[in-house]
Image (cartoon, rainbow, N blue to C red; front, side, top):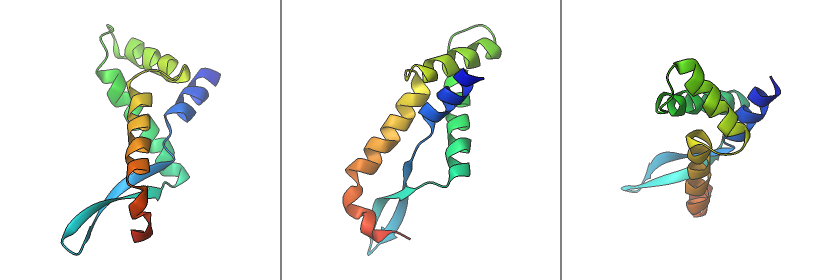
Length: 98
């Protein structure tokens, strides 16, 4: 159970980017995420990353992905890191918040 909690917290994003059209240009605007959306995104990313793994059964795939997430490895953690990098790169547009 502790491995699941640690794995999920390592995958949860803190910010995300949303597209907003302003004056004919589309900007990626970083925004804070609600706590319930953090959890749902983390679970969604864990499942999609587990489906792409090469183990035999889905139970083995999901277990391997959760253990990898707990060690801060794996595709789901990479997805969170990429999301945070995207938000960091577009930090200049944060004043366009909704």
